[in-house]
Image 1 (cartoon, helix red, strand yellow):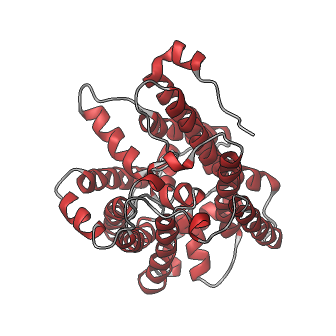
Image 2: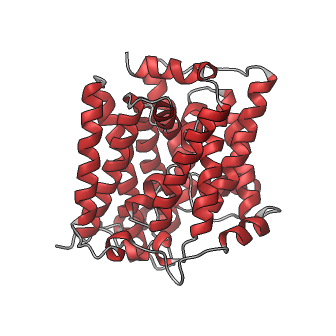
Length: 365
């Protein structure tokens, strides 16, 4: 069975570049609104785990993760997208980068009080702390990609690579095409069990699954664009490391090229803002003491470097890359969990996270 999206009308109306921006903005808006309503956050889930419990945040994160995995793999099986063309699989993977970058990112998101995607959603809801941290993240990500930190990142990434291409888990393990959807369904079942024990509402679960489905939509849209575009277009989905850096340079550099990533960041922000306004949760939130601000900025810087080293952020590697069954993404996600749990237990006091507690109280009364 081969199912594909016909994008010719969009190309004729908007042009190929405009269609990519529109796709990024629309899918980003779905992600932003769903993430705001579900309070999706890897940092919050890892805090629960580090504190010895499987709570509502873990249920939401696991449902998002499983939804992205299930639908991405199912769409690939149906011929809607070609994951073999995705950079996360077609390019060499970095084992050393995934491990070191994952640890850095995990530690950074604990200190910054949220991963890069969560910071963008919070900033769209009026949180100035998240806005400043997100800007630091974008600047350090750009420095790590093309700036002064690029040589260090490249040397660390080249310590151990997978070869001419990355490793796709189902092929590496000798399993068939049903492995991906089956694994996603198994994780979804676990998420629903945890959700039932914590009495997470159906609305919150639907929003959490919407975050994961947006990732699958991103794969399908960019795969269709790549197949039907005259100009080369990468097959990708949601991530916030490269796009944050690209969006920053787009507004600073005349003549920069617009693509899917350039539409993604404002799309997420507008979707999250609309959801916050609709729920009457949009409010200005200012800065705290200097010590709290310092740790947030250090955390954001660690995430910026860590995401570029790991091949993606908590969304880019931890949900998007893993949904493609890329080995290095699964390793990066594992190391993000290790870095987050270790930092929570060693350097993050349980009573030092009022923002997380307030968010949990609003999301899960």
